[in-house]
Length: 93
Image (cartoon, rainbow, N blue to C red; front, side, top):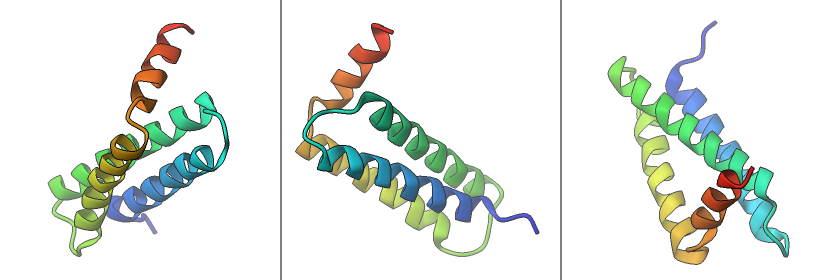
């Protein structure tokens, strides 16, 4: 059975959030973990938009889209320079 994109979006957003929480718990920034977390969040929101376009039933697609924006709000609120640090780290690779 093929799982709907709304369920996959929740899964990817949850795993991305877990990666960002692991980085938040550590004392220093772990760049690969943050990059993985951000990429998984973007994959999750992409699947949520695909679920919107396919007009899937249920509220999971709304929950995943709202949680994406809430996570990024708190990420910028508590760690404002983390995204800038990640862009600099990617540029130097």
